[in-house]
Image (cartoon, rainbow, N blue to C red; front, side, top):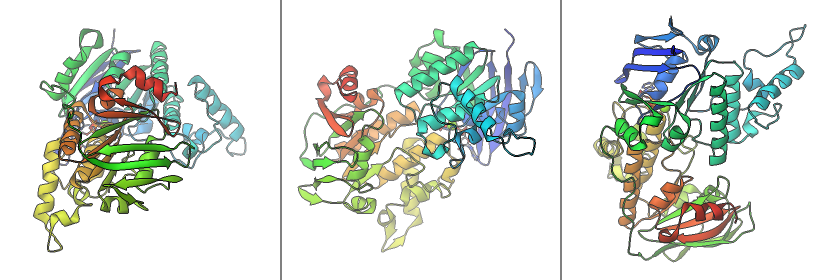
Amino acid sequence: MQPLLQVINITKHFPGTLALDQVQLELLPGEIHAVMGENGAGKSTLMKILSGVHQADAGQIKMNGIPIRPSNPREALTLGIAIVYQELSMIPTLTVAENIFPGHLPTNKLGMVNYRQLYQNAAQVLEKMYVHVDPRVSVETLSIANQQLIEISKALSSNCKILILDEPTSALTDTEAEHLLSLLRHLASEGVSILYISHKLNEVFALAHRITVLRDGKFIGTEKVADVTPDHIIRMMVGRELGAMYPDKTTERGQLLFEVRDLRLPSSDAHNSFKLNRGEILGFAGLIGSGRSELARVIFGANPKAAGKIFLNGEPMDFHSPQDAIKHGVGYLPEDRKAAGLFLDMSIRFNIAAAVIPQVSTNGFLVLAKEKALAQGYVQRLGVSTPGIEQEVRRLSGGNQQKTLVAKWLAIKPKILIVDEPTRGIDVGAKKEIHFLLRKLAESGVGVIIISSELPEILGMSDRILVMHEGAIAAEYATADATEEKIIRSASGQ
Ligand SMILES: Nc1ncnc2c1ncn2[C@@H]1O[C@H](COP(=O)(O)OP(=O)(O)OP(=O)(O)O)[C@@H](O)[C@H]1O
Ligand SMILES: [Mg+2]
């Protein structure tokens, strides 16, 4: 079969970084082709070159055998290449319909926007996507999942031949992700070619025909999914044998560290009580929206509670703000890294040291050498791929931003650390590293609470597991008798 798209020896430099080094890729008509690789491997950069956001320094792209060189996204769209970015890129205050058809709104004879026509067109696109939202509401009122589906609808409204999706399911629930995957299969069967970036191996193996792996900007290989195992792909991505993803669990139980008694969330009538011991990793499972993050934010003083008591080392506590909680040794790594206090315009060094000024000061004066040593240490341990610790966080790849956030909270050395989806968007190697760092933290006496939508991660990491359902702790399992089935059943209220 004649390839629809050929990427031939594409090279791209950024200041201090060779993001792509003679990369090649071939996409067949109707093919779903996954692109995988560690954080910073160059996946998003390659997609941005195909969609006209960046231009390559060298190399060639051919579509149907003819060289193309889109110099902006609009030109790429005219050629039939549409992209759904890793970070959502809609205008939140505009309506769904206006976001789907930016720049080409239908007008009437007087040149005014024909809203009836616009809403009708949008409704058609949404129906094709099986998305049930009103095209007249503004995008900011929608869930992240629906926003993601609107982004995809927007790309499809251009009748593209090549659809590029950059980690589209990282903010979706399993059901929503399933829905998206079946939609993509349907599109491919109608002849649309799909380039699909994801860190989720099971997803890629369920969806793609072929996988191309990049490492450090270099092309490592393209494999048919039917011919390889996930382990083989992991080896291609990290360049070595990775070993176990999860550290050994603790056998001894530390002293009581933290207790929550009859805590009620504003969204529910349930009274929630649980205890956390020193050295323990307590897992919180549950569906998205079951109250796990809300509970964490209440404990952390970021949200008000409706009722209940919190004890730290036996002392009653009532945190009125996150600063208050941090001062008492409670840390919370939230699920949304953008809203999470990463200063995007500042350096990695600044971000890691920001909350631990005393640690990097002498006699009240900031010591640059200490700050540098702290940041450098974490950048190495977590394998943040960057030309240096002075790099602005904005210029890091998505996963490397997440690693910086994790480093920031590890540096605070809290007594209790709550991590909410800590490995979202993170590659397998770094994921393993974060798992082992969390266990080490626990072994040093810290109480760790991990919230994750990935059941293998919850099962692999936790000494004990609580399952939430509709704002209530619905079940508790010792790690030895927890299974995915049991957790799913409790999470869905059975
Ligand atoms: N605008 C930019 N300026 C400078 N460097 C950049 C820029 N965009 C990307 N880079 C660098 O290029 C390299 C590749 O980044 P890219 O975003 O393509 O990685 P990725 O494979 O998509 O990673 P992730 O899985 O974390 O999203 C990284 O080292 C990154 O820091
Ligand atoms: Mg990326």
